[in-house]
View 1 (tube, rainbow, N blue to C red):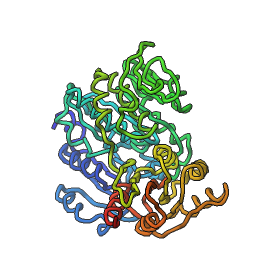
View 2: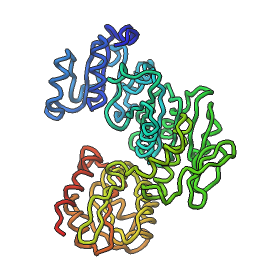
View 3: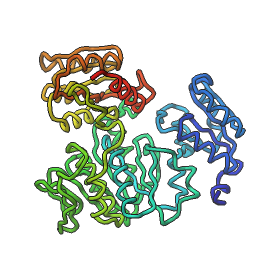
View 4: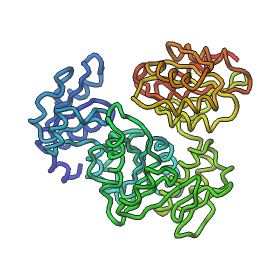
Amino acid sequence: MDERIRDDWQGKRVAVIGLGISNTALIKFLAEAGAEISARDQKTRAELGEGLQALESLGVELILGPAYLDGLDQYDAVFVSPGVPKNLPQLHKAAQRRRLESEISLFFRYSRAPIYGITGSSGKTTTTSLAFEIMRSAGLRAVMGGNIGNPLITELHNLGPQDKVVLELSSFQLENLEASPQGAVITNIAENHLDVHGTMENYISAKQNIYRHQAPEDFLVLNYDDPITRAMAKEARGKVFFFSMENRVRDGAYLKGGDLIYVREGQEELILPRGELLLPGDHNAANFLAAAVLSRAVGVSLEAAAQVGRTFQGVPHRLELVAERGGVRYYNDSIATTPQRTLAALKALSGPIILIAGGYDKQLSFAPLAEGVHRKVKHLILLGAAAPKIRQAVLALGDFPLQVVENLGQAVAAAQEQAEPGDCVLLSPACASYDQYADFTERGAHFRKLVYELSE
């Protein structure tokens, strides 16, 4: 381990709040650096399971249950898991004392490799994955992490200035971050996570940290078609690039007729024809443009971007074609945890759609989704805590064929009963999964299993 890291943390008393995957890796990192660690979680030992034994073997103190936030003023630093609300009184006090840290903040502090970050309300995982694959296709040594894949904090010793780090960054990870990547992308901004951030202003402010601390030599890629992100160009300290599906841009990339075009200082160059892009939907074409602009700014050729565009099949749980049963296509879009994501999926698919939606309510408006349902959906199947709210929004616009079920198994069975050859059954919940599943990947995996079990 780097001596600078040891010097910073040797003998320091730190509290780590939330014992998920990223913080478990963080605890191991801090233990190796010589810190004295108190690991804390509101869950009980029984709920957290066997992983606690590995932490205890490192000499970590465990404080679990209702008192997990007690005594934080005794610590030199408090590390918070991304999903833990920062407005809790104990954490707010820690932030005021400038003691609030995270796995991501440490990675930014110590990484010798340049960091390129992607955020947005939707599309950030696909854009991150595309940028990573484009860089690798060009022969660069690239790693991917952040809100996707494995925590990179334990890989710091393997990373040097010649490497490229591509990070997906959530609003939770950005919220208290006082550093920004050398290159940043914001795919779009829409209502999301208001159950945690409280207001759209707070949510947008968290996203803005991805460029707020950039230097003049850094760069920012923004969605020109989104008025919120377009306006952020005025605040950028570095070079600004745009991507657009609707407008010509001077620096960046856009859709021109049937072609995806890269532009620098007004000079245009073809990336590839839109029809050769393997990913379906306008939203994915926009994601590709964003990734291509980021990669080109890093120095990667457009040929490498085009090669990936022609072959990249997508990320699991994102408009993923699971199977065809009896002439009916079943799509897993479990990542769609907001109405905007579901609307993008509805737009991307052709043919009659039977939509399965609902789940944990993040206090978002379902009015725009209701309009999309009336335009594009043949039959609506609802489940989960938000089902009554979605049902009310849809029926407020007029009668509509829908039903409410108790779980995903019943939803898939009901969809099969309603479906006819040529139809699409789409799991695109417009909600988080926490009322019935640990996360969207567990929900998507269950949907896959249920579809595989359907008879032809």
